[in-house]
Image 1 (cartoon, rainbow, N blue to C red):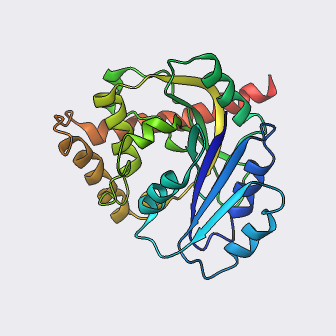
Image 2: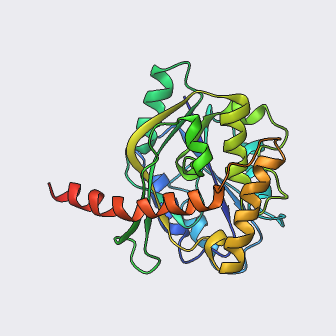
Length: 261
């Protein structure tokens, strides 16, 4: 079994090395790492170049039309049996992540996707956890409360991705990953397996959270994700989603406490 990991990049010199190192250091070595770069003008590609000898890297650098266009290009290039996507300011939490993923897919032939938990870390201090996204088992009724699994932790069989011409809708600049997963869960009803472990560390302050204006636009696109698939938008959908995220702050304390027990 081979794993393909896709990382879109654009002027990511401050964070890309953590991403590269977390992939390169995996105990499971049958993987490829595809870097889809949007013509970075900083030192991103120089840093990537340092890892070409250490890791099975494929690098393309050309103008793209945004994050999800880059992801779609990466999916087309992937040759692995399993595909994961991790952004250039995120990194895997341990050296065992790929081993966990491969073991589950090898043991459970009916499983089409795997996901786990995620922690948000401070931009300035990657050892400081600010939110703990405990995914939990999927139940369709949770979707009404804005639930979705964290996309950076999701690994899918390649044939799931290949069943779409373009998995990610490029017109949803802030919510295409949400819409894609919503489609998989409500229409395709694919079988996901939940790993009760933190798989990814994500720096806080992503594109959709960079300003109030972006948050509002992101909420609009979440609702649009339901509309374009002919789903009825749940009542108080955004309020429920925001309220549910408050629980992630509580789980930080539980997570930290567990580390010392």
